[in-house]
Length: 515
Image (tube, rainbow, N blue to C red; front, side, top):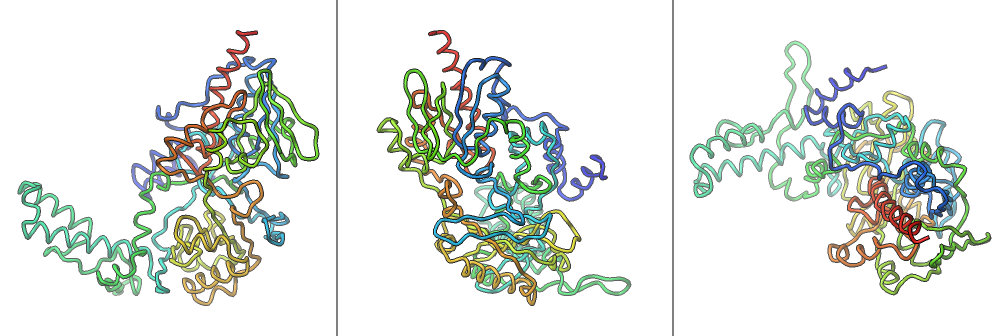
């Protein structure tokens, strides 16, 4: 077993100081910054005599229920599906995939293989989800989010990310150096500053002494270096015109600069749902699956939840963690403002395709990471972990975002999604698509009780609809990733649940005083 010290030494070699620092935080070896305030203070026994019904057994509902239960509240968690986790959904062999308007799929993956249909990575700055992994002893492993050995596919032309990123950087460095040499920055920089910036650009862009970009071994080799008299043959640099013609070739350079996409990232060993099921184990006696909520009504004395094909449930309070677009369809007595804001919530479509396959990509030197494409499937995602084993699950599509072809992908017939994914993989890995088998696909816009992968608020809506939905409605409180500034992530679900718990605690204390 690898020791923590050996692990951190390896992370240091791979990613430097920042990688070690973030890894130590994730492993609980450094204190968490003050930005994470921690779990709300709910003294043991403070909820005695009070009941809460929680709608939804996703991450928001499970974590909030877990904390309320520890404080002595009587809780009931209602979940419409036959599983917990919500959009944290790990698909394994034998699982049935139900999609609205489609034939059911039954996953045929070999034992031990899985597809993370929803949440699939843990940023180390998401301290709430790491808190539960630590507290409940869920083992984690590194998730490789960026890999320069992976490919970029634009207009059906393939190059490595290594070349796309470094040739682009080289030409940008050359252009800036020319600007300095021609006096274009004289009004902005002192002579000393210009000299320092020019030296920095030479290193950053791998420029020649004259300030031009003539290629670099950073971009890779046509023939790899070898022993004795074999120095290798560097790739000839792409031209600036080629790089500009394929604008999407620059995408990999930007992706890892997104705050919550930076290395290192982690994943639970065995599937993303491991954390959700660890929390579920603590609250399982209070969870009722296959219970579809049809209505919510609040009064001065409590709440009543109506169910399809089951008797109503009453409680002192309700914590609703269902997606806003689903709550909008329920029978309720909410205010006109709340009703309008629920109706205005837009949930983004998203689709994935996964294949079982021999791990041919590892034989080509690709261990984890993403290959990007301008085709509707958006990317090919290589598995992290299980290195060197005979088979793995290759994510052949993760269509997400506002690109028209990506949105179209989420509505395509399954066979068309499979065909596009297979074609892109064949182009990136010639001759290997014949090894792909047992495909499954999930589109969140077609998944019952979801209606999308997450809520996409506009900046204007953050000032109106978003704020309205953060407010309780009588004895009904609201939480979920859609009520956070960390949308689409488990972290947002957890932190919004914490805010709802605080409001519920205050209301419960006030009700006791009144009584």
